Image 1 (cartoon, helix red, strand yellow):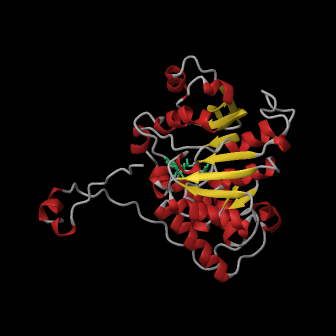
Image 2 (cartoon, rainbow, N blue to C red):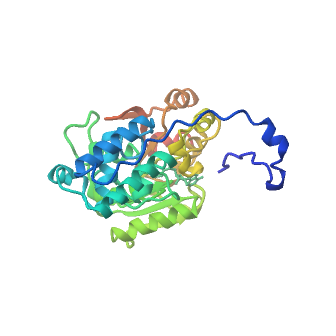
Length: 339
Ligand SMILES: C[S@@+](CC[C@H](N)C(=O)[O-])C[C@H]1O[C@@H](n2cnc3c(N)ncnc32)[C@H](O)[C@@H]1O
């Protein structure tokens, strides 16, 4: 997966010419001074302070939290080894001097570096489960997590009913483009009898996935494979394929917010129209599904383009609390018409 090349001048060539050509620097907004000792006392004081700094700095929230309050609460609870649910219980508890220094440092790093909080604390929660993350993987936020709950857990609240009736009968699941392994691990909970294969092109990402798989004691059920989509799997077939592949188009890649630039480019880059990998998955999936199997695939905003490319292919579009028409389901029989 091609990363965007940056034209960095060779070291020795950062010359006077480059210096003189540089536009005048915009005056930097003055940083607010750090609060003096004793000004912030309780856990809630630190959360409030962080919210003010995050809002002032216009940070982007898209990595497990969606607003400055949730992000600040997450950062501060994690740094204090508290579960986010314990915030209310300890809101008025005093923070020690050492803890306060650590919190102020983290708040400053979040603002200055724009690193997602999940990387600063090496953790993210997905569907209530904690996963280890660092810059080798994208911070998990796939809509497929919620869809596993709403469309595979036999919930009555689903709009389309369960996609697979007998979860216990699912013997094999493939998580294509697994990243941190989060979806494979979540899937292991819904399909108790399934062996799960998880593939990623990035060896670095698989190291993180291996850590998460080990943390959940799932090494005997989840096998990790390094390679390009289906290539490392031979002719294996699966009852279910889930995939959250890279699907950001060229324009989106150019406009990625600073927070997302800390994440691996290959986790986003879906080629010019964002659908390069999705097309490959669609074309190859039928060869890796059992006759009653199906593919659940997240594609972002490319629904119109995908439907235009396959006008004869009925895809079932599934909505979540925060997305509309960004994930489709298609069964093996329908996919076979493409193969
Ligand atoms: C959007 S991330 C999804 C990660 C994880 N499933 C999640 O939902 O958080 C896409 C992943 O696909 C991997 N990837 C990119 N191109 C790939 C390819 N050709 N074959 C397999 N994996 C690929 C990236 O390394 C990245 O981990």
